[in-house]
Length: 419
Ligand SMILES: O=C(O)[C@H]1O[C@H](OP(=O)(O)OP(=O)(O)OC[C@H]2O[C@@H](n3ccc(=O)[nH]c3=O)[C@H](O)[C@@H]2O)[C@H](O)[C@@H](O)[C@H]1O
Image (cartoon, rainbow, N blue to C red):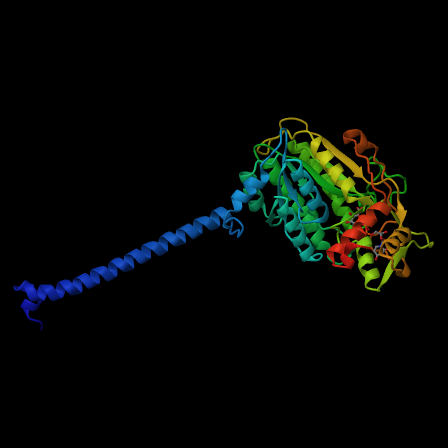
């Protein structure tokens, strides 16, 4: 049994001192412990709060992120626009972004940098955009929280929607990627656009492929588009119907652009003119498709600079959306335009032009067009676009391919581009 004195010391001094020391130690340990608990609790609730606010999105926490978006979206000319360009690291997207920025419009890019084709080319385009003061957000159009945040930071007046799963034949390999980007992603983007207080006008990329098996030439916007030959075409056609409903129900201003086989510098490596160039230079054979009756396939190849002018003309004449916060306030424009070149060229002729520019003969294998989504020919009637915003393609295939080849040789380090 401990002595009473030990329990209740009458001579507090010594004992007290000893006890005070123990007590102090205990007190300071428990204080530290409590403080640590407090700090852990604070940190945990902050992280919890951030994840609620950010939806766990890695982008938002990046240093300077919002500021870069805000700066990039700033309009620097009178009556200019602030444009969210989706697919900005893509072929058309990068060209349009730079053109808008150069004339003083605000531009913010969005791109998921997927690996459908060489990601390093997309990164190189991103660097080019960065040199032109265009900031690209790395993210997916299906990420609604990200889109909402972008609209909170920048009050976009327009959306140039070019993000898509492109390519006609790849749809047989990976059908779901077309649904993910061209259907689900489109709907997510439109949902955000219709919900914001001041709705942007939306201009987006449809495709000449919607004409499918239409045989009436040249293709006019009023021609039938109910016979798609590929899932790619079907998703673009669906996009036209989907955007129509958002225009009808919510008052979004919509312009759909039917691009006709766009080509040029910084193009897409999956397209024929690009992959043919690579193979010809590497001495590899190329496969040229033909219709069953040995008829050559033809495309209304359209040069990138002409398409950029068409995109900008569409943005300039889009008219305003009328709705706000998901409510329609009146009718808004719904438009569809062909952006083609109006002079189709056969694929073998296109190859001949490449051979001339590359000064190398191609090793050609002609095969009957497999039933993989291709259509025999495309040919645009561009009267509507000409009337609406003076669209007038100015580059023929010969000139355009020459510019492409010059870029290709320089970009991939052949001959310092001197061919
Ligand atoms: O305007 C569009 O809406 C589409 O244009 C583009 O599709 P296409 O017109 O099919 O272009 P592209 O693949 O360059 O084939 C060109 C020609 O070469 C033929 N072709 C192709 C490959 C091959 O190996 N051999 C061949 O003969 C082929 O049969 C075709 O006749 C875009 O890719 C597409 O995303 C979409 O935007």
